[in-house]
Image (cartoon, rainbow, N blue to C red):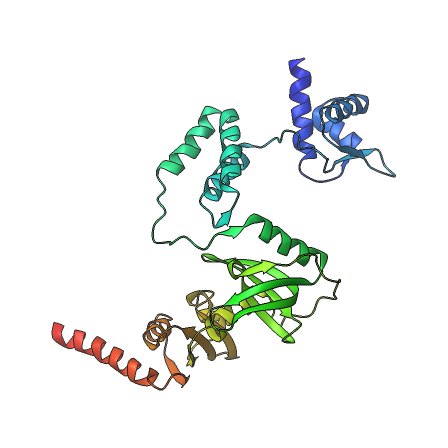
Length: 321
């Protein structure tokens, strides 16, 4: 009986790799006959695992079922799930904290002592610091938006903009992006006839979903680049553009998403478009890239602010002798 149970667990582990398995290969891996594999597959089905037979060739595939049977995780997978659940209890997504805690409790009850010790060691040695909690987002809201993105169905919602006030929007949703402390929806606004970025904590979906749409091409190569451009320029009261005297590839790692959008010029230079609340913020953002630059455009007082910052640096050096 113990040998059969161990073989079932090994069979389940193979099937959970989400690939198609010929019956003969499974039999070879398990060291049994194909007839034994068929019997073991039937036992898994009786336990609630939806093991499907492949068409055209004797083989099997594990599918998704109506209920959730026990999962078989290796050591690294179990630790990763436990750490993820602990993180979820303090996430910005509301309504899942208690659920995540219940799931974590169940998982820790069945973890071997060696793995429980690893998880607890990591938790006890970890401190969250320097990150203010972001606005809480309803899990139902995220799922509604994600479902509209997947189905390519128009999404209507009420939106509160800090500058434009309340409005009703009809959009063709493209992607949900979790950046920093906020969730964003990147979508084509049919009322404005242009792409827009929306803070999810400021919108309230209005079901039902609208008609299906044909996806449009983003104005940038990928959604992360588009969001970085939106966050760094259009949404800020102070905007600037500087020419960096290095190639775009050379400075990419020094410009974090949301700080600015890089535009390649040639192999020796690129443009950096930035946005911030104040001119002072623009100064430290520009100088943090740590390369020579030329100011192209910006607020009237930006050039003076850069000169004052340069003067402070020179003064500090002069005082040291």
